[in-house]
Length: 220
Image (tube, rainbow, N blue to C red; front, side, top):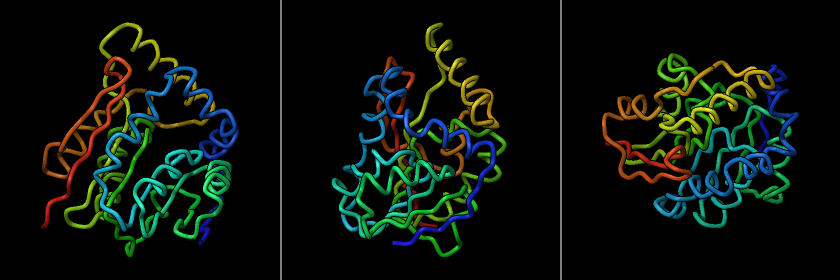
């Protein structure tokens, strides 16, 4: 196991450090089990013995499911918050298959090649410009041909109560963690345009506000 760290103590990292101990209970209070169901929904599509990149994995719940359910040979696990990485390491007992990296998309190297990329409730934190011109191309480049990109995130709200939830959520994270986005980007369209293919399948949760989907990268 290797721990790469640039010790990013930006306002974003510090903000997520603060909420790390209560992040999971808080999300369950608001969304019940919808977020966990969405993250795990398509894990069975990942072949055994795969190399997997989990970007923005949070406190480690998803990592534990990936290790037990997908039987990967290697997992690159990246999160900006050192406290989230510490919780994740503890949850999986420092599993030797996991390479933990504290940082952002700049922690992904040119040599990183994986069979699956997981972006669990992370793309909503970026603006469309940041996604299109920086983050998504880096993630896409790390994915092998025929690799899978699994994404669980929020969909555009359709009702007043959904709009209220999203408004409160963005205000909360902008104040506490200084995220750049102030509204939900159209991440589904951006990933589809980048991959040049429609999602393989999709499932929705929490009245349609939460969606889980995946794409397959075609051979060049």
